[in-house]
Amino acid sequence: MFYEPADADLPSEHDWSTEKYLNHTPQLFDAVRQAVGPDTHLLHDVHHRLTPIEAARLGKSLEPYKLFWMEDPTPAENQEAFKLIRQHTTTPIAVGEIFNSIWDCKDLIQNQLIDYIRTTVVHAGGITHLRRIADLASLYQVRTGSHGATDLSPVCMGAALHFDTWVPNFGVQELMPHTPLADEVFPHDYHYDGKGLMHCGEKPGHGVEIDEALAAKYPYKRAYLPVNRQQHDGALWNW
Ligand SMILES: [Mg+2]
Image 1 (cartoon, rainbow, N blue to C red):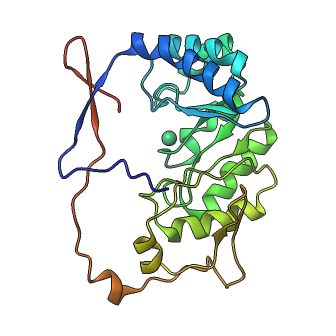
Image 2: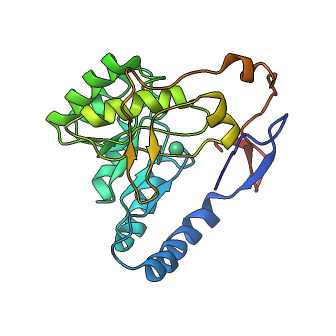
């Protein structure tokens, strides 16, 4: 199954209503939890769409459904904002897919405001810097959960899996499968076993090659992520 949200030459527009979202989401997880039973991990990505107090309300209302994590509940430029969420809910919090360094998450980790740090090899300074973030996180029992969207190439996934294999406070690795064509352009040794586990493979280094001749057959094609517009006044909102 392939999901590619960057689906248009110019951003497609979606409607957004925080009120409807906050009312609908607990009903959704109630139905899903009943359907899958107590043992399946459920994760939810809020995409920075809520204010801190709204995120606190969402986390609280989702507690009965025992989420594995609630991701990016509010923008994290102000790390202190997470204090407000933390004071109100025991739903675990994951953040960091757009962080660039340890300074973006130092306060979140040291103040125990999050449970999973989602920084990636490609955004957050490479393997060496990611190791520093993970070591800081381990002091506070924060686990890793590296971002793994399709706009991160198989090279990033190969490096991430080697990092994951090392990291003592590993949590989980996100996988959004690339298309078969992308996999062909980036021949790699890692694989998904179809049962929830990924393996980094045996090749030296990150184990990913780039077939430049094949890549040259596919020139750059612009593709944007969508944008949200507030239903009540049309203003742009986090997608
Ligand atoms: Mg996300």
